[in-house]
Length: 306
Image (cartoon, rainbow, N blue to C red; front, side, top):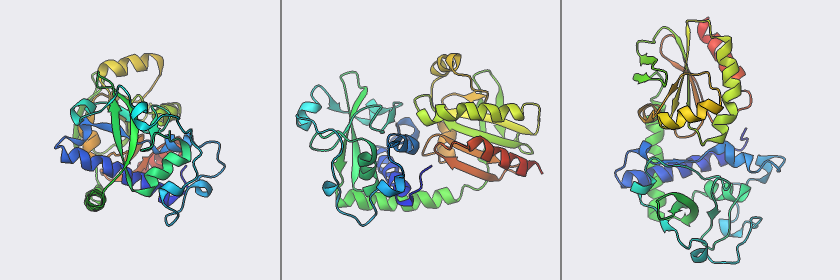
């Protein structure tokens, strides 16, 4: 669990940076799946005893004065990115990109590799945006954190205010009509009158995979209860999901390519879990991995069944 509010705020800020540049290119936000998994960033710092003790505070020194603990490359950035090019938004379309310092390398403007809390500090500062570089096939291979202009920062601030206002309006279930990999139909408002447990995820999301066993246990407890409906919305294609589910059991019905639902429910981080009561009110929402997510959701289900 992340215990430092400024860390969470900084990471949310970085997500809005990504969203802004998508909108500038007039692309649908769900087509460019650049996902910052908060939990993964914290996992990469697992050797630190307390995130709140190691995360820079809001009014500390500028980012360039933070002690460098990451690997410093002998080559400059141009050498590091040799053979790669800055990807266009068309090339980034439908790619799942994890900016965690582990799934692919992340560099500063001098070619220094960023990992762990140092990478977190870049996001926390609110001063940097991620540029994504890829190979000739258009596949993302590296990320460079680039300092934003004052104009870009102001645009992000305005975007944040607008998104927060829209997000605050989400108090009730949003209508959806979807079909699972097994052909099951899920429609709201047809499901009104039941407790609905929703999970948003995608295959490459490590925290998403980590919570699956606990979600399976939760679903098993209510398997015979017709008043409780479980459904998951995934970003991936049917083919990718079917291959993944051959190796990993997930008891929730899985909706493939659920980009519409992801957008409608303002899902900006993964995994995200919702519980909707019988009247259609959203009574629980959680972003990011939690080791006790099953128990928390169970408590909300019982509350909604009373």
